[in-house]
Figure: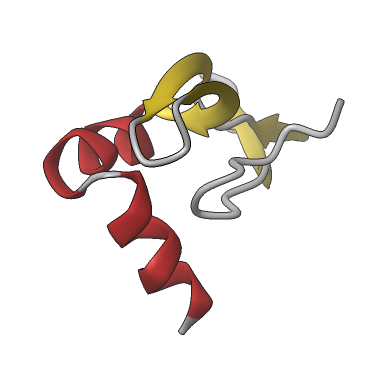
Length: 73
């Protein structure tokens, strides 16, 4: 399974771990992915999406249909 948000497309970033002695080693910053079941009223069915916590907050505000419309642009 890819670590990518299905709504916004956010994926892992890379950077450095910096120790107290200022030694730098490469690391990955993973997105905060959550699985969520969403009821689509117009289709009368449930869908399961894997989205970041930030995308789920936007989903609560806008709705699924509006988010998909924004992504199509």
